[in-house]
Amino acid sequence: SEGNLYINFFRPAIDSRGYITVNASSVLGKGEFSFGLQAIDWGHALLALKNGNATYDVTDTFSGTFGGAYGLKFGPVELELGLSVPLLLVNGDRGPDDEGDPNTPNDDQAFEYAEQGLGNVGVHLKTRFIKTSKPPHVGVGLILSAYLDTATDNIFGGDNQLMPEAMLILDKEFGSEGRFRAALTGGFRYRGKVASFTDVGVGGATGTNQTVAVGSEVPYGLGLSYDLSLRKVSLVAE
Image (cartoon, rainbow, N blue to C red; front, side, top):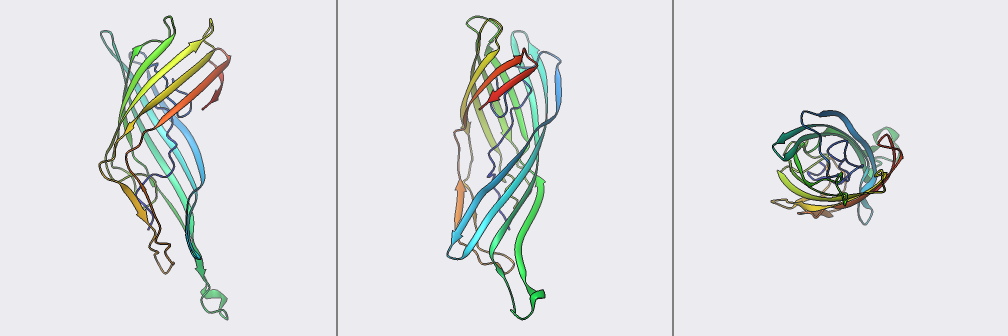
């Protein structure tokens, strides 16, 4: 079997106000709603374990994240509720393959695998304290998230535990029209228990007996954006 931990750390921004994975402080207006496919991503060679001639590789991961967000306002307090739903495809290989009887080519056994399923569904609450629309055009926001125990078992698609996360956002617009924007985010993702995987072999495959583990994390990111056409077409870097 494969592991109950997430090895592809790509997570798209929770709404259309963000960059690619980096979020911006701006929130949806009261009553505004957005929904759709947030991102499709591909990860290659994300995990490689080796011990002697025994190998274990996660060759490719593909994920598509669907999401939605809704804007709320209570007096001066601006809020945004969000939801993210990742769907995943994972394939990999174990080695060495079993060639069986050299004189019988039909009994060869390859230890490739392919899995699909659901990742950790995320529930998000976003607010901002300072708007970039007012001088000095610096914004400050906060996102509180909970990644739920929804991941399909043993596909490296997510953890089998609840993971809360807090992310602080600091961003700024530059120029008279705000064509150039930058955002810096940093936070903490809590794991109540370490998520780990040990390759002990399965179905006749030789195990590497190697372990990969992950605990609580400190995610951070920097996003840069320049509008080629104001608020319509942008160049983005992270």
